[in-house]
Length: 294
Image 1: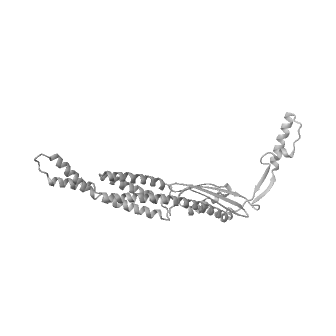
Image 2: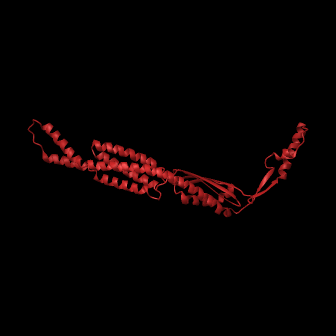
Image 3: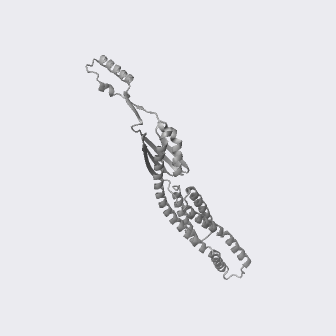
């Protein structure tokens, strides 16, 4: 079954080194294109994250956000940077002397400045974090894929309905086409009789047959109908495929449109012209929908 390229998924996993939270958002795109927001400390794992996500999301613009909250064993010690504190203390004493301030300099004043209290980051082998992070990425990708499958079912219903409507119109054209030459002959005979009424000119049957043969050749759309039906059959097969279908759908719809355009130009019939207009409208809507199929 076809899938949509629009989706959202979230996954979490944790161990002694902390909790990993991954969010994935996808929209339509010609190829697989992933951009990510990853903490600098985990940037070495970006290629692995991309490869993991690509297993479940084959096509689309993918935005991945990763958050890492260190666990109790993953966090380093908290300490005071005495050099920074001493620098702030000297600055406060200088201001106090210059402006003649009488207020005392307290510990709370110094601690209110940035970078006085620092959290040491305990270094860990990022590869040791990968098994847990992989679980979070996989969970987010599967969650996103589930939403894309749900959207895909809605696309399948709409596209299948339109393919059925176009198929019905093409079959109706097939029924109309055989009568085109006979109808043209009747109209031509009637026109000639009206022109020659009361005039002693014989009808050149050979010229009439040549004219009919030329019309039959110019209005022969059997090849276009055969190819159009073939494309419609391929569209139905593609809609139930479990493989990437978006680009194939777009190609088939493009080829179908080409055949219908040629058919409309060849078949000089008001009925066929109306059917061709309806078919072109449906193809255009299907091509828009196909842009969002994986």
